[in-house]
Image (tube, rainbow, N blue to C red):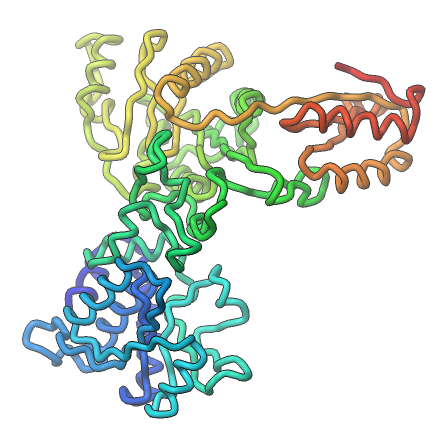
Length: 504
């Protein structure tokens, strides 16, 4: 069977695990119910398309691979339910009916509302269990498990959720690995499809400044934002809470943030031999141009450590900057770690080799091909006249070769220039800040500051001391100067000018 063969032969260990777990759930349902007692709810979306092919593979395995001479399972026996409404996308309708014809789905087309349609269907058919393409994160997934009885007040049946623990990334890994057809809307920037009245292409996939061109759905880097196109007024930026002030103080409806994480590669830092100077400097630089930095990670000089951290950060942040571990030494494994994180191989790059030759000439004592290898198929070289070597960009990961503050300053300036000229990354509105100092005790100022945090959720309000017994510095940071001034003024009204002093 082509689905089972494709998964068994792929290199994606995570996908094979998800596949095996889902097959187990489906096989369990087959052992509990007869085929006549089972139905499959198909809506033409990506999740139910995955479930369709999982069911095909499971039924093939259930029957010992003896259903047809070529194992294609033409004449799929499981009853398929399709709820069609006037608000359904025409492309979804076309894909659903084409798929039904391709695989011989015995389809019941229901044009009633969901509850009435199920009541009518179950009244006339001996259905006891229905396979659903529900995933954690879906609004209907709350409280559900892989086997969950229907809700009170609904017709009685068992909801079977084989892909409940699958992520957005898992869904697309399956569809692309198995090379199966999916609805064409996903190639037009749609990432989660509802009705024609509440669904638009995901603005996060917009190409450049165009409002008409979008990348494919599988190119969405953060699967948590797949439903960003399910409302016409959805933001074009990621909306993430920040944990400043000890609170989730940035209201999702009031603040839009672009996030950039930093990864520093270096055993010498973790062993205490050297101090990390690049991470703190990058935090300041990113903050100065309006990016939010959720964290800085320092990892060991080994491929797995780099790959695991990149894999974790690239899907949760808009941009990842990685520095350290680039070059010809045995400990320089950053690029190989990147390749592993993206599931590609390392291969010699001709353009990168030309840059190397320009710097060191042809007198190279090492393996030339090894020195000019880059992650294949995902690497873009960012050339700048001021840099002897180009910056390296692998999708949303930028690799900096800087080893000290001076080199970092030069590379950063070049990166910003390149970004402005070619839209490599967004440059949001810069942050502004104001600091005040006070000799008030932590106890005196704690409650008023907590109240301010609640009144100004769009600002970061933090405190620190430059020395253990020094004055307390209160920082107000945000993107609206008037809001910052208003918060500072509120603090002055509370304590008076004698207790507080502006620092800037």
